[in-house]
Length: 173
Ligand code: S3P
Image 1 (spheres, rainbow, N blue to C red):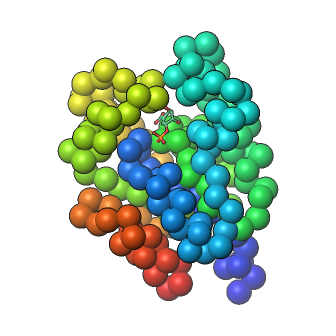
Image 2: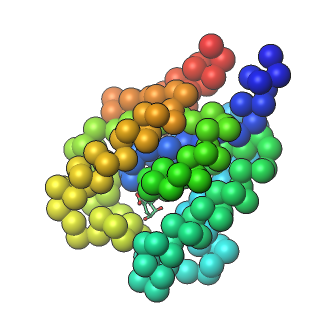
């Protein structure tokens, strides 16, 4: 009983770029009356730069260090839904932190993901990149998403409210 309550205090939304983690995180947190945080948004506020500028100035490795520090800070805020960047699972220390909470993996089909990313201007890893790079990036991270996930939702044919409802149903069961 206690372990279940403990697990429910921190909810991490994980999944590839463009899978809807931020949108769903906001809706989910308001339905649960939890706080909401988005790692990228918190990083932008703290550093005072866009994600693309951070990549330009500090490289991906610099961004990953900042991202890990941010996750650590957010992971002690109880009753929170935390939407994460797609690459957060690459760092072992991040996976260790997220294992202590409930991880919800939002899956998305490639075509939908590609359409969403086409309209994005602050995703430095895939800007101007071919579909091949997106697929390769997805494939490299998928095993981590699967390994961490307590709940997997295939969002491909669902709207935002349906995704949120499925998450709430899974959390209750
Ligand atoms: C990244 C995903 C982005 C952002 C950064 C790097 C990645 O977040 O953290 O551009 O490596 O997949 P989203 O998953 O919200 O796009």
